[in-house]
Length: 117
Length: 118
Image (cartoon, rainbow over all chains, first blue to last red):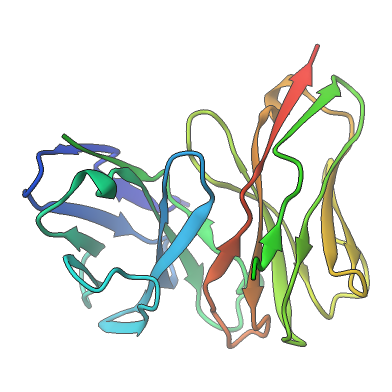
């Protein structure tokens, strides 16, 4: 059973460019979370999505950041006009539907390391 | 206010010995979940163990156990028989709302770097 997939693993962008980070949840999981980890820090919640719905975006910066989880395909975290401060590791996690034995656990992908030059 | 506090920036342990990594939390919820994750130098986040606030017994997963003291709001991770491969960053995390219908965000502590010496 494949785990959470994220790509690319490493992404380099110049200031002002756009970054698109993709996340495919584990099979059977319909809940996706995005977290950001700045250097030497713990992970900070950004957004929680279910298929075609944003459930909680309280951790998302107000500008330049957006996320989606379409009916088909992976979840996308999009950062427009990147700045150096966006350099971080971005992790996606997924969890299963209600009633599953491990319904309470979020499983993480390997992360995307974004470097803004 | 910090919701998850890990007071040990770094810990050292001799191979084959046990080590305890501290975690205290703050919540007004009656239902919540507590997690530990391991982040090796390669960077991925590996789920280790979960404890629900209503679980009466401390969670165990192989060499990992969670010393859950609800009244003290602590959820310390105990690693028995440490191995060199246990050297990593360890994060404590909390999810408020631990029921099967709740999928709240995780709040993470700052982490503890564990180094296992041969």
